[in-house]
Image (tube, rainbow, N blue to C red; front, side):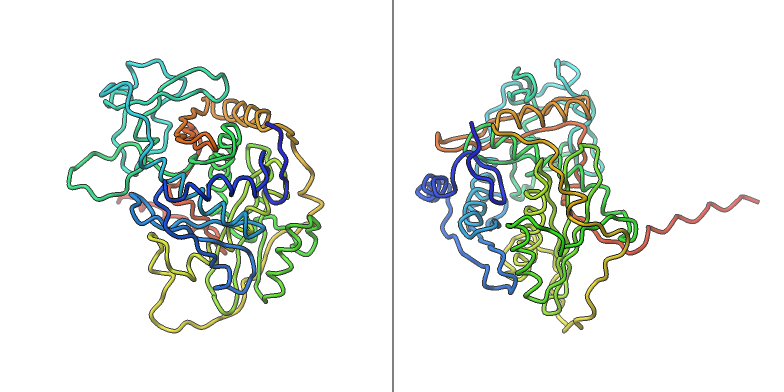
Length: 394
């Protein structure tokens, strides 16, 4: 389908049309409340939360955007995506079968696993049918990589595959959803290593040089609120614009981080900025189920000084040249899928979780991409200390 919306994101349907479809279906997916929490912070970047009390994962989902409507859609669709991963995962087509007995276009050992995983190609697994995003051919993926359920169970299971929300996405069309999922998988891979790179060794973008109207307006509001923001340009093997942003202010002196990848540099930056604002507001609201207790110290904390950007600083013009432009969502999906195949040697596999004709929800399972499980991106001031040299035996 042809793209028609380009402000902060690329979509094949205008936001008003998307909201008209999903607003009347909120109850179907157990969403009881949608709240605008933008005013809890001083930055003015729209952030919305959606509440789904009967969730098997997170009961509160956050959404962000360059407008309040986009943030509302983002929050509701994130909650809807989780519902589909919890309740709409397809039934297994093949039961208790090891990967070595199947003809797969990837190595099952290259999928995301729990720490200390005992997975091998001979481990019996249950499998669901997916679609090779590059060729359109049917193939199998482990059901454990698709469905998500965080409910406590007394049954012991060995650490094997790790089901996560990485690659879980929705869209106005099937290809828009797959494109969104592929961008997320690629983003996690891009940012996996930057967290160990000291600030002084990174390349940064001067926020005052950003001239994209949408991004410049958001950065202006952040500056007017007296907050500090740092934009790191992330080198990556995909050849796509990728940015990580850090937010800090004296009244909430904790770093909030966000990241974004897209073929459009402006969209990549917009995603990073809005995500860092969302992360900050999530901590301020305190409503998400999995927030770290470290964010909320019982003792009053000194505001301290704002962080200082070190290393190379370049202008927006140095990083904003468009890489690829796609008028159709199908073309973008095909290019991204081929890129994954080229760089990992394995095709991304799509499992369609959709339950309604008005929009699509998919899970992309991609072997050979990196994801740390929590998508944390530290900002180290110094390189990690080298381990002590072993002592020579007498």
